[in-house]
Image (cartoon, rainbow, N blue to C red; front, side):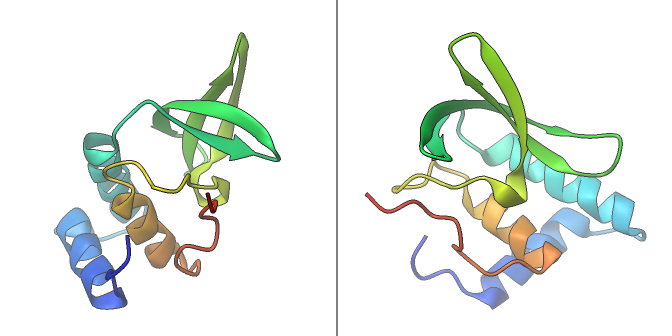
Length: 113
């Protein structure tokens, strides 16, 4: 995702949140576009363990989570806390746009190599 800057993320956020007046509506707009554009499944490592991200969900308490699995084990992980693989999956720029909206630094969890 090199070459992405704050202005591009802000344009994406504007696209996702047009006509959204509350933070909850903005979150729903961001979730919708993230869900539409993120290429699934993909694998990444969480605490050194390889997992498969099979989907994303919006929780009742207002968090976007990644639906992860390893074998028969299933775990939801906050998308803000999800390390992305390198290279990142198609559509991962929507995760970065959400991180930007939420005030997280860009690429702070991209796994190298």
